[in-house]
Length: 218
Image (cartoon, rainbow, N blue to C red):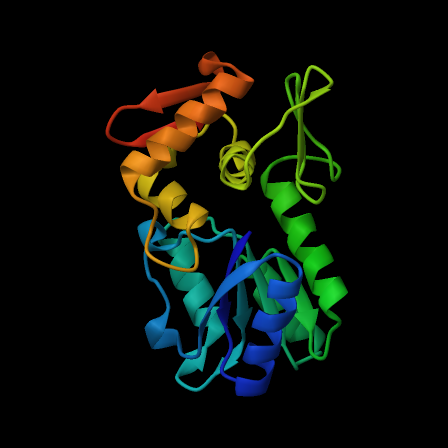
């Protein structure tokens, strides 16, 4: 899981990154609205943690801009404000969840998983797509009840495709999500991982949209 954090507080931003890293979640941390990506193609993240009060404006303004542009990235608002009106403004403005500072890392991680589960249209921590079963928290994949041995990259590729089965995931987005802490994965390397995964789950399950990306068949 690769998360975008937009939070101006130095202590909180650093603590968030360290806490998420301990849970196996990578992140990119920005401190100003002006630094935030503006279009969907630039949002190679699984979710955004967005503070309401930022030095150069309101996180609600950025959220509204994203939603007007058709950006469907899940967003959890983080704020010290506890007033009902603030929570309603965030949720009605397109946020997927709202968490009040201070909060426990365990609660934040649980909310992240819940939001991503809803986006993947799954009712529990075990994702079922046909005869494929994926357990994101346990890093397990089963095909017809039989456990598959996947490399870490193959597992994360499987997870990214499974978030929106039947929807094409852009090559650039996959490449960035599989190498979130550095330069995006080279496309030739991405194709190798796709090929390896196809051999393990069946070539017909991953469709190529030439020049665009890949889709998990449903």
